[in-house]
Amino acid sequence: MTTVNMLEAKTKLSKLVQAVESGAETEVIIARNGKPAAKLVPLHAEVRKKRELGFLEGKYPSTTQEEFDSTNDEIYKMFFGDDE
Image (tube, rainbow, N blue to C red):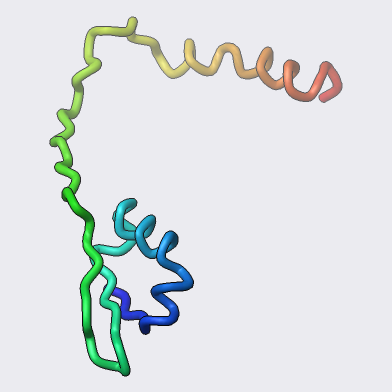
């Protein structure tokens, strides 16, 4: 929770709203003469979906670590050339 004075809130309103919308700040208190006068909060709280682990299981062919690493030399050459 951040507290800002009225003048700062006027000057930085866009940034304060963006911070609240993005979730960087849960709320911003706007003070007048050092006393809380208003609270800036998101209009609609974002509902986070539960993530299910393993939801892509079986959708891609399985591979061993050796198979995965087999193209490392080719990729290195693509980025840095044949000089090693």
